[in-house]
Image (tube, rainbow, N blue to C red; front, side, top):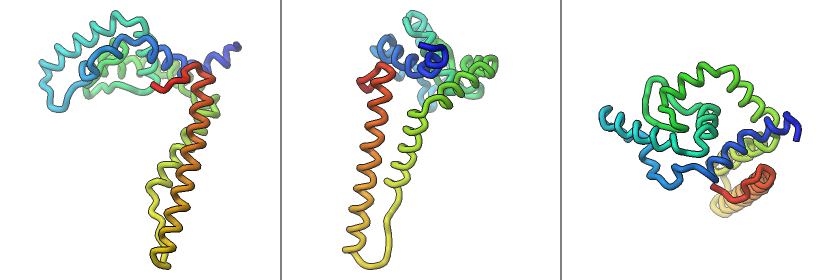
Length: 177
């Protein structure tokens, strides 16, 4: 495998490692997120517990890297823990590592045609599903337009499934998370 191929595979590899080995899979997901209206004192104790939980995880660094790449965390709102870091810590790290992260994200996105195709198909599918086919001509015509729209939606969903399946097989995580 060349270094370029390795860079292209980095994001899926990180996600596959997390899916396969994260300790938090067995935990209550609410532990890692601040509830709406939760008092700061309650969240501070919960956040500390979540961070301690993450520190024993075998894929903590992969989780942190993926959180940074995904833009998780906010310096104004402390509302999550990921990869053993609070949201504000992730935001600070993202600023400190902005150049490295930009290069990593660019490599992940620019060199991955399947990712672009998945994004395009997902947008097309969403647009088609939201579109309301209307024309004059009465109900029989409307029913025909709806039928055509349903066929187009099924076609886009099938294409999306094919690309997603090929991508998962290529990156080593055939089973959906």
